[in-house]
Length: 158
Image (cartoon, rainbow, N blue to C red; front, side, top):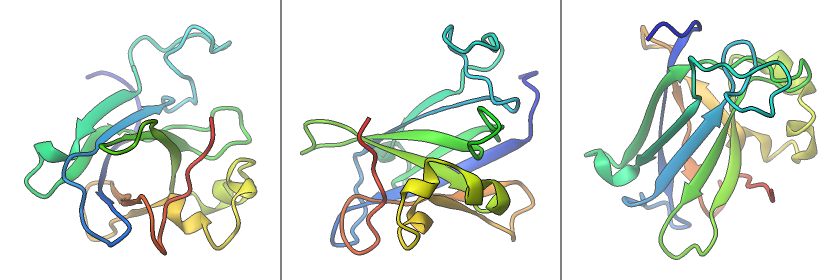
């Protein structure tokens, strides 16, 4: 793949309200490229046809019930929003899917001024932050999704 950008991996699991892993959730991601452009005709800066920014993975396809995405680190979409990945969760027992965002732990300054993240109570913001594994040679970010319970991920009405 010749798409410019810093290669990253996003890994995580989905947990229920009791802290048990959900082995059959489906995770979708959609993100901008390193310049903050979406592969979408409505993006006024022009679509980046070389990078689709879309991925889908079921947690049941991994022996550890993880979702794993090898992608590039997105740029700021509009200069105000911090680099982020849009995340959608589909699973049994949910008649509609849940929308959230993944922000990056090594983007603290950008996260601090992000207008969407600013709408989230400060004590709940960590549920949206993917933590970079500083022990890994590659850029690996950990992002677990909690559907309920004390660590419940913030979900957005779209």
